[in-house]
Image (cartoon, rainbow, N blue to C red):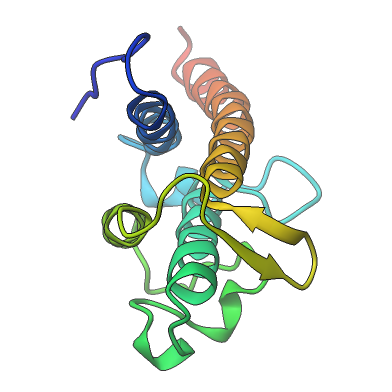
Amino acid sequence: MSTDRITDGPERAIIENMLDRNREALIETVRGLSEADARRRLVASLTTPISLIKHAAAAERIWFQRFWAGLDESECDGYSNRDEGTFAVADDETVVDVIAEFTRASRRSREIAARFTLDDTKDNPREGTVSMRWTLLAMIEEFARHAGHGDILREQIDQKARGQSGA
């Protein structure tokens, strides 16, 4: 799936398009990797290609399902106690599973966000009063940053694979 770029028009359409494009860019960093490569740790943190997608799904749930929709943890799809600030991926979760989880969470985020105007606000214990506009922009920032991380990890993984194959 490739979302066409919107560069002109209503503010909301532009913001939502940019967010969707960053969601797709993040998924592309892991697509086609083997399960082993998706879990390969190339940095000191738990950041791996698959964990970036897992973390993004958690961010979707935390901001849209928990914060904006006010859902209880039990009402959130895929929510677990691992959502809070972790990049942990269970051993039995595959790349396909984690991409599907992120895709489901993103779809639900779109549905929840559509219930609010860009100027609607809620109080957040850590950030203060935030608008839906701020939330969407924060998610663009978050996913763009992590897509960049994923690009670098993917480049390292692909380079190692080319080196091992003698190319």
